[in-house]
Amino acid sequence: MSAVAVRGLSIGWGDETLIEDITFDVAAGEIFAILGGSGSGKSTLLRYLVGLEQPTKGEIDVAGAGPPDLDRGMPPFGVMFQEGALFGAMTVLENTALPLERWSGLGPQDINVIARSKLQLVELEAAADKLPAELSGGMTKRVSIARAIALDPKIVFLDEPQAGLDPVTAAELDDLIVTLARMTQLTVVMVTHELSSILRIVDRCLMLDKESGRVLAIGDPRELRESDDPRVHDFFNPGLKGKDHSWRPPRTM
Amino acid sequence: MQCATHPGVGTQDSTARWRLEPSEGGVRITGRLRTKDGAAFVAAVRSATRDAGEVVVDLGALEEIDGGVIALLRADFKARRVHARLLCGDRFRPLLELYRDPRPARSQVRCPEPVLCHVGRAVVEDTGELRDALGFVGEMTVAGRRFLRRPRLGNWGEIPPLIERAGADALPIVVVLNFLLGFVMAYMSAHELASFGANVYVADLVAIAMTRQLGPLMTAILVSGRSGASFATELGSMRIAHELDALRTLGLEPYNWLVTPRVLSLVLVVPLLTIVADVVGMLGGLLVAVTSLDVTARQYIAEIRATLGFWDVTSGLIMSVAFGLVIGLIACREGFAASGGPQGVGRRTTATVVSSLFMIVLLDAAFTILFRVFGVS
Image (cartoon, chains in turn brown, yellow):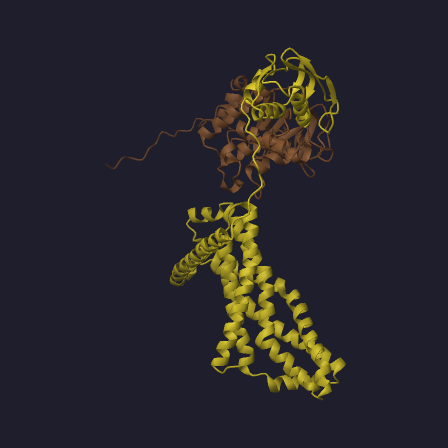
């Protein structure tokens, strides 16, 4: 059974449809990426997948529990938002423990142990008592991931995890995502346009196209890189498109 | 050793069920272990292996186990100083490896800070605030000088919409509140004045109180809560969204571009609103005079004209200019100092209103003494 199954979904804002007829499956344990240019609806699709938007056309099934319904109880997935969305008044540990306090039914001592274990996984146990305002961008994202996996969900949705990070920090975050996915059979669905991350860690990806309002391609990013479709090819092989950029100002010395 | 079957409870998975049974040198677990079962499971293992110094926990037959349960189990063995061997198939080996060294629970209770520390921290923070405020005044002075040298570079276009926001949009609330203020003041004094046959002096009371003190004061309080808070929030949000940095990189001076128009708009608007406040406050008094004190409108107005002097109105307007200046500067300074996300903006907005009110009352007292010393009121 697929961890995430989408059939004939249309997404958009208000009456405006952005992308139509989105159909794809994400297998359990897979690292799946949603790609596309700016404004192509990547983050919007993610909002539909996590139940923040309700589809008017098409079907979504997440974790075999049908369409995501955030009013129904504990969601069977974790979510990391682009800016981390940590609660500023809570420490890192309190942020991580929050879902456990809400849903696990465990006592404070047990919650403390589990929350610390999650912070240990993201290598931020030393920052447990810090406030989010004291963290760097990369640390904020790591804490956000720790909070997303606090209840050991089978699926996590990540919104542009590498955005705004330097290449080294982004690579460390990639390693963390791969470790979690491979060692806990976690299904990862992420929105990204960081090409290096896509080629390094993503198993399969879905590419949205704003111009046609359709899904442009689905598949292994390493194979899509060789695609004959110029739009897919250009995305994976960004270049200067034949323009002459060889001119340099003359040296004065 | 006992054998126990535990149905899963909770919302995550209603089919969760696990079973613990004795095995050679320890226990053997079957079924599914989710995070929510962690406490009950660890308690069952502890009970089954109470006196053992070395325990073998066979997890090989489990269908599913969450990382949280492994963390709890390992933390418990560590706390009891029991040497435990967790056996499992290849399936859970990575998970056991990930949670091989959980930290014990640590108290999250924060001890109350000693009073001396609290005082020291407050002094350090307030000193920093004072230094930053002085820095702001210095920056504003430099920017102001630059502005006076090259006034055409100022952001003049933003002043009319700001005047509309801070002035015209605030007019209804200023009118209603000051009318009620004049009405209540006259109404409260009507009985006493009538008992002395001094009905017409209600006009003196309301007119002098409104023009010298209550008109400027009430208007400034409304403007600080309305426009001051709004300016601080606006500039604070711009600051945390790095818009101020963007302005700088575009070669625009944030002090002249953002602060000067806001301060100027309040310096213009507060006196104008004060004039309106004075007039409607006197109208509120007129209503009481006509309906409760048998004073005609003509008598009421004639008494005001005879009583009110140039300095009664002017002193109130001078104060209102100072109030506008202070509200604008405090709001912009607090907005510029915002940090730490939306919460930081909220803190600065609150600080704007509190500091503005404090400064308004302080200035009011200072001006009252000053006017008395110079004999202008």
